[in-house]
Length: 335
Ligand code: GLY
Image 1: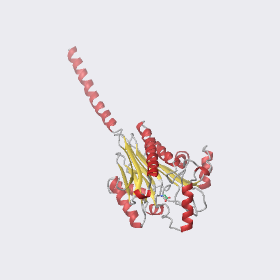
Image 2: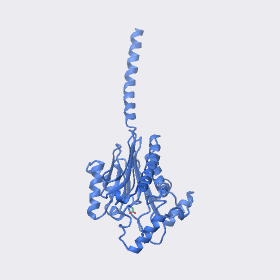
Image 3: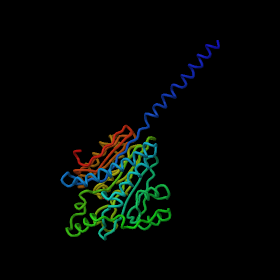
């Protein structure tokens, strides 16, 4: 009798364990993460990029990808990961964000950035800041620590001071090649979009092990910009958007067209209402931007961990990594 009870108890125990174990396995299987990054799209062709430039850009993209991957592999959040990526790229002078940002017509570097958390659709953005080393970190503070979404100029910097941000000497952002681009812009009176054939905005999208997505974007905007011009990057729904129900998007390109097409939000809506894959939604939306006359590209991450790139320019500085060990960096359209 006792023996039968012991056997029954063991069987009951095993039955009770089995579903729990199976459930844990499913959770473990779902603990994957993925990350996609960009450093700008544009007329990036092999003949325009020498070996040294290419090596420097690939190294910077690799460092940024590693910074985000480290966060995600340790179980960190998608928001922390995209911020970590963008901060690395903001410090690297190859890109048009933070150090190495393009010059305004008046000869300053005015920086824009945004970040969005897909788990609760919290968002923060700043525009026209001139003393903040990592504008994406200030955007994060706006999201986390203010009742607002979008701060600009002197007010954004006053908020930064109150939150203990260090004021960076504007000389940190200025590089010789960007100054030359401004001189060329003024001398040739070229179109707003011609001078920055490589747009150089930076961004990241991620899906973390908890299944949440996030996006961040940072830029100096356009060479020779005037009148407080703001592009798509810090505009939530245009250059940056994240929603766990659909996807996370960061854009790069001719900002005015991306604002008019509401690119990032349109991609998410296509996924949500038309049930397109993130790749289909990105391709359709970039096609729409092209039809308006704009060019550039997007990176997208879905809550299932799928990532997508789409661009209508010859190249886009880009990379992606995931928990299966994928680690790719690419520049040209045919890479
Ligand atoms: N896409 C960056 C800008 O137009 O400002």
